[in-house]
Image (cartoon, rainbow, N blue to C red; front, side, top):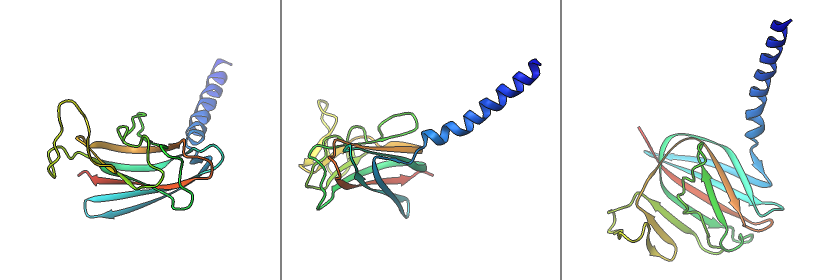
Length: 176
């Protein structure tokens, strides 16, 4: 009798374990996200084309990548359905760490903006000891670190406004 209960408990646990990841991996919530990948030599560009629905937010966690380093992030608001000014973009890795290092906060409603990662000492950039970023102009920022990633990424757009849209491009250097 105890063996039957044990076997039954194991079967239930296995079924829960099989069903639970699929429930967590729900692709997109409250909006749409289309993902494209382009590879050119040692670089890969991941493009998220997103549109919010009723909450001004959208989430997608369908992208799984091999080992890479983030070297650039670009946000581009839609021409006709521009998001609310100062909308936020997060891309979380499997540990819940924002791989954008906060570079996706307060994005502009009208302009394409870029964040470059790992550019310390390159292209004439100089980082002082009092700041962790170097603003090149009003649309570009350099951060001195590259971010190593591997596995599932979760995109979250928040405070973008109802029915608004845009494009996020992540530029990765493929790690060998």
